[in-house]
Image (cartoon, rainbow, N blue to C red):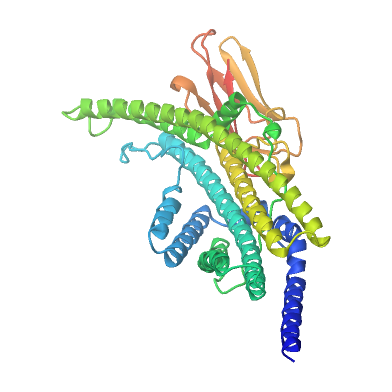
Length: 503
């Protein structure tokens, strides 16, 4: 009778073990598929470019977009402080607010006197402000990318952590049942439980922070915080150093050509020159020559010199940013390649263990141990993958153009190149010079052209005459006088192109 009792207990234990094995087998045998699902494209999800278009468009004022972004970043910082109150929240808040400003590369706020405005100077300051708005727009787009890739990374981390928790739960169940039949001990079980509870605590905090901060996307796009949060589209294509299709030198030259910071600085130089002329000719005004006359002239000259210094500083910053961000991108891609290589090796090992488990040659507990290592390696690969995408967007922010061959990765439309389409026509006959601007593509319509001249040789001239190809006529003192400057060409689509000329 006693033997039958022990037999019943033994059979019950075996059945319970088999039931636990059956309930956890699906997770264990499909772990790679479930983990890699974090990179699978979703239905009705928003790409990075689509999100940028929702935040900044022709119908949304840039200032409003900036305010929305600031509030969204503030929500993220508050969520961090709420769920990680012991220093992490404060540090994260400072990091968020410290990385964003109106102008990242250089602050181009002028200190020129505001009381001596003339028409010419107002135009240049207005043009500088227009370029600064472009800088703000570029910065907002870059910050959107940082948030976008950050949320995708966090989402993937949470999914992987949830799989780790499920595996650890299965490991605990397996050990408890093995202890019942004397095949394991309490020390091993306590270690796994301790690991499980630690991970679960971190997971719950991070999960709360993630869903709280995710609401900032509604603020970013002008929706109510109560609305359903938009879904973001994972990026499954991995970056490669070989697909960076521009040299560092080409990037630097392109960045200098495209830089709205430099264009704004150039306009401020012109405004400073106009201000100097205004101060010199103040003898003709009611103020006349008095005790303050020379100080006004000296002050205006120092402001002109300061404007040149600011431009030189912007140029150096651009060059430094290109080199540092290129190095950062290349390093992040190389680190990802190492993580991916390690992950692929671990994945192959796990797939071998799964085959052995299915053949009855490996216990569930041993399989779970291998799969936990696999998830750790996969998590690092995903993290460095999104880090490299983030660094790519940062580099292209400085260059002002795509530097990566595979546009499908970024879902970024290529900017049209106007260099071969728009040209400045020059006709010189002794002292008389004719300048005009033409477009070889009829779909590219020019709205107006502003001609600016170096060394204040001529006043700024503007033409809106389509029939004359926006022509202007000049007359120099000598037939050998060199005339140089730039033409600011405004297109009907709002794009602005700068073309230089030297006659």
